[in-house]
Length: 293
Length: 292
Image (tube, rainbow over all chains, first blue to last red; front, top):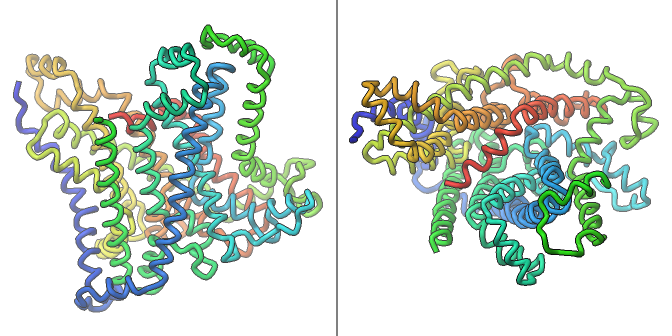
């Protein structure tokens, strides 16, 4: 039976999306070619904001920081999560029971549900130079010389943020991969056992191979959230000290709302957007190719 | 631990004779427990210090257990930031966004997944891209436009914006579900003479209720946890949501160590409650996006 005339149902969704997404997007791209402080006249200056951007060392260092944050938010949690999910699914669930596996899964997932502002409070408090718990612990075990202003010194701030982000992210890949493993036929594992395969061999040849779809989804989504990172930086370091933890979105925010350089801020966010879209296309291509093979 | 070890055979495979005596399994369990402890330690530390008096804190430090429970830190903080108001703001915003976002996703997905309107691939690409866009690229025009229409510093602006952003994801997910919708059910509705609206509300929506529940849960929690746009839009005290209120208090000189952990604890509690309430839908839902 042919179905016709359903376009009416799209009207509210499309109108709302044009208003909230398309119009602002076009405005930002246009603004990126102008000089504007947000209130006065908007003056067309062509590519000046972009040439300034590519000569701005802060812009480059903000992208350098993002590379390290992708490591902490996407690469490390995905690999560690893959390993932990396999241990929980293929070892703990079998030797100790499903209940233990889901207990661990919920525990590791806990940091994911905490609002980012609270993550900031939590870790800002634990890493605080005067009353922070970490320095007290180091003191207590006689490692007081390692005590540090973790988030307040340029040398350690970014690494501290990276550690915190691994803590935040780890639960997501574990949950995704454990769900993906449900699809795996248990007979495959039994056959591998009969053939005398070691746990490590089964992990590499069966587990990793079969959950490639989830693997790509996790890698794409976590990489994109690393590129967009704003909240944790805002609440933990404010981009400091001396820009050691500056990221593109925070850089744009500062230009918009602190320096009133709206044109320049728009150029930063436009570059970030283009990068995210390009990356998504590349990842989706890779994903399709590997799934169809 | 010994108790659960007895329960193990339920799902073990027949072969593997070493399993009963192998000590490695307890080494692995201990390692996992240690890792879990590291992961939840920050939460535990916040919890014990939130109910510790400043005097006990000064005496025993952050790691001592409080000799008696001390609620004043939490009560003081609650009253100082008028936390009840922030909770209500967060709750009502998240609830309205979740309801409207699900409704909008249903309408879009009905047209794209079941109606299969022309050019639907392009609509889907559009919604996917809309979902990927960083909010930084939308924020300034939205800020500017909302001032023009006098919706700046209003929860209404936040509700409108997040309804659209969440629905972009919902449309994408729900369309792939509706593409697989059993054609017999739709044909039967046609035979019964039901119009498109009746078919939507009395056939499609009830059948897809589990997915809609997952979407609702997601939208609610995501909106609750949103930080960036509410930070920009909700500047006055009475309009702030929980994350914004907690985020801007960071670094406030008036906050001492115990009050800061009290603020952390009451920020965690609502999230924990949602987690417990929604846990089952949540685990089902996180994976719903993965397998197309």
